[in-house]
Length: 230
Image (cartoon, rainbow, N blue to C red; front, side, top):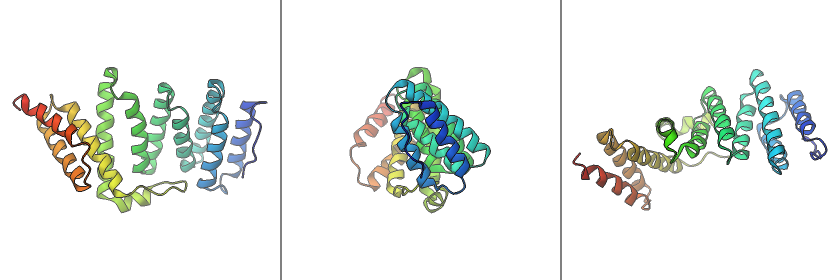
């Protein structure tokens, strides 16, 4: 296990020392150990904007080196960590989420594809400048959630975890329902018939799991479609 360092003296050197340690021991470090050590180190850098920038830059460089060495699990773990650290910095979050999405797609890891799409959705949500990007993210997320819910056992096999268990099927079915409802709201004017289909599918899933809270939201969208005579 990587020994703790005092990053205050030389924050750049500290994370570079960690990178060197990981590269030299990459074949004997488990995903779980790497994720834990990276998280601990990353939290140590969450003091100021400057140290967060240093950690993000150096960790991203480590990810590039690990990618070239086909250590895709480690790269995915780094991107997940950087998305958390940069949660409220939209440009950085978008960059790391897109990079993490690409890695998840290479690995066929649908759970992490959805996680990174959720990061992107948080950026584009309610932002008129990103309307097309938001709809595209919703469409991709629906596609991957359908794969997870229809082939749950296979999705578990492709889930590149660092020790966490995959959420139960119900979680992904409810996520799918919400995504379909959000899509319907977005396309109700340009494609009302498709919006209706998505609302019906979402309603079926919410009813299946006896979740009542989103029902008024769905009813409002459906009524709005009918109100315009479609």
